[in-house]
Figure 1 (cartoon, rainbow, N blue to C red):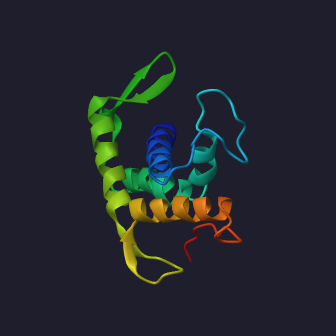
Figure 2: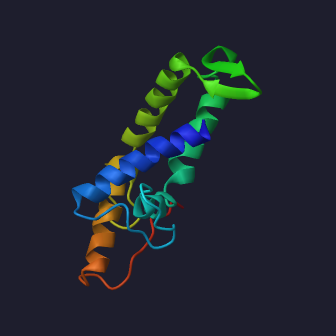
Figure 3: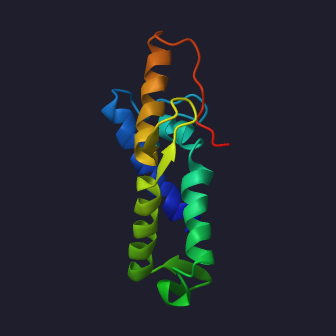
Length: 138
């Protein structure tokens, strides 16, 4: 579930970086390997636990996913189609959840927060803002 969730999150972040005009494949912390969205992986670090880890724990604790949502074969455990659908639904619910932004103090969903962080990064790279501030909760 974590791996699948991180893949979904990487796609979301990649889309936001492209939307604001940044190349998601040229990063700072993750190595630039052909086909790997290094900048998306860099920005994704701010959201791993509050989005994906949270969704995984919610799916387990609320029993949204159980044994019937997995296929077990050759010492592997994979989400089956039904499990992926339920996981994606929980992931989308989390992405659409509104929070109060810690800097601006107004409500917006996590998808919008990701867009703001991408825009902040773009402004730092163009010199409009001096310092990048990572998104943190509490």
